[in-house]
Structures are given as C-alpha cells and as structure tokens.
Image 1: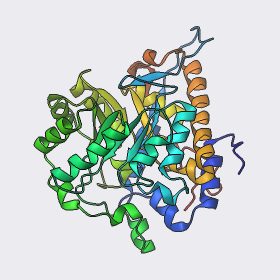
Image 2 (image 1 turned 45 degrees about the vertical axis):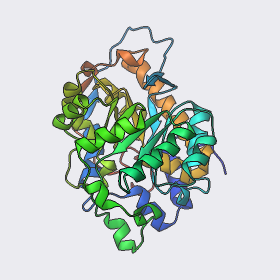
Image 3 (image 1 turned 90 degrees about the vertical axis):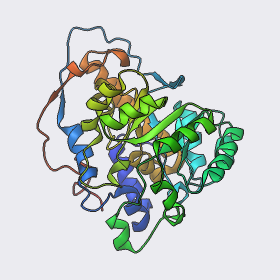
Length: 357
C-alpha cells in the first residue's frame, strides 16, 4: 500500500476506496441532520488568521506537552470504538503509530483488541477511555485491569447517556460492534458524585470528555479534574449543538488555567489545530481523520496523516509569525465568512465531486 500521500485529501480518497459502505458511514457520519457535525467545520471556517511579519521564524518548535507527556505536535489520537472494522490490527495500529510519530493515543474501552494487548503494543504512554457499562464493581474491575496494564491516565466520556440517532448507519440497517454493547442505563445514570468515585478509584490523572458549556467546565474544575476535554462526539450524539471551537472561549474562561484543555470536532488541517490553540486549548485530538488514515493504509497511513498535519502546522506557524506553540494568542484570529458549503470534508476542495459518500 503506497503511503506517499502529499495531502490528507489523498488519504481520504484512498480510505473511501478501501472501506465498505457500512464502515464508511460509521466513521464519517453524524447524528440526524448532521448539523452539529457541520457546525464543527463551520466554526473553524469562520475564523481567519491575522499574521504578523518581520518575525524570526527560522526555527519553529511545534511540540507541546499534555499531562506532562511530550507531544511532537499538539495533536493526539481520540478514542474510537470498533477500530478493528477499519483496520485488522485495530487499536494496536493506533498505539504503534502514536509511538512511531511521538504523540499520545486514547484507547477506547469498546474497541479491539483487549486493553492489555493494546497497552503492550508499544512502550509509549497511553490514556484509557472509559464507557461505563456496569455498576461500580464492574468499573473497579476494569480500572484495575487498566492500571495493571500501565495506562497513564483515565478519560471518562460523559456525553453518551443515549446513543445518538446516526441516520447513515440506521439507513444501512447496520451497527458497529461498539453499538452492540450493553449498559446504557449505567451511562444514563452517571452523576458528578459518581464521577468523583470513579476518579478516586482510578487514582490517575483524570480527563473528563464531552464538556460543552462553561457551567460544566467550572464544575469539572471544582471536582478536581486534570483536563477538560471539549467535545460533541464529532457531531454523532446531540444534533443541533454548537461547534466545539465555538464552545472553547467560554470553557477556557471558566477553567481559568486550573486544568488543561483538549478539543476535538472537525479537526482536519494544521490550521485548525492552530486556531484551537490560539483560543486556549493545550492540544487537540483527531477522530475522523485518524480513522481515514487507518482506512487508507493502517498504521503507516495514520503516521502519514500526522506527518502531513505537522507540515501544515509548521508552515502555518511560520507564515503567522510564531515560532513556538505558546506564542499563539486570540489576537492571531478574527471572525470571517466561510467560503462555500460546509461539511465534514469541506477542508479538502480537490476531492472529486467535493464530497465522498
């Protein structure tokens, strides 16, 4: 399989060639009208850059840290369920790619292979992402396994009390393996008090995923989380929500530096990464783009996705007039008018027909 892709749009085209319709719709679609998913892209496209000139950008450092772990670029690999239907190695391919490139990956509790096999696939630190599928005894047993396997942090996802109405999947009459799991009644019953108990049980740096408002961000900080993960599940859960980049400023203000912030939702370009960092995120995570890389060429495809993002990030930093990530500020951005239609692939105008379905 060639991995000489020169743009991530070539990655997407190859992934579409390789993946079945069912898997493609699972990976690429959103909930109901897909308004939330489109707003993720619309929000990013509604921000323009304000570059500064005559700045020494002869050396650019695009690295950062997250929870004390070094990242080659401020891009991590979001948790994705059922990775085994995208590439045969499943989560192992992601773990190996993260190690090869130099970033962190979140390992979903509803992907294959086992959390132990995935942890053993590379020596690099990993974050375990938990979907609550049972009572607190069930949670404790799973967290004991995760800690024994060496995971360095716990991520609790809290925006899946109900499974979103993902109509592309529904019209296919098909569900991914992760959808066939049980225990939704336990996720629907989660409270802040239960989150506290899970956090204490884990005894690890704690990431709360699915925060979408300043109010919940403030509560998360009060409850002592290590990181607030701004996410609308890629537009796959609640339809007619806001784009995550639109949520970000109020959440940054509410967190007030008391926790690190990571964001996902529509991130497909290096310029998207810089916009999120300029507004206060410490790093971003990629979901769909990660899956497209795996679908195109497995581990090698995902590494190439990250390399292309790095090239875009470095180029954009130099042209913006910044040489380090911590130099990015809100002043580097302004509101602007998006050009053309907005959808999950609209950052790639040279895709044949404009969109792959």
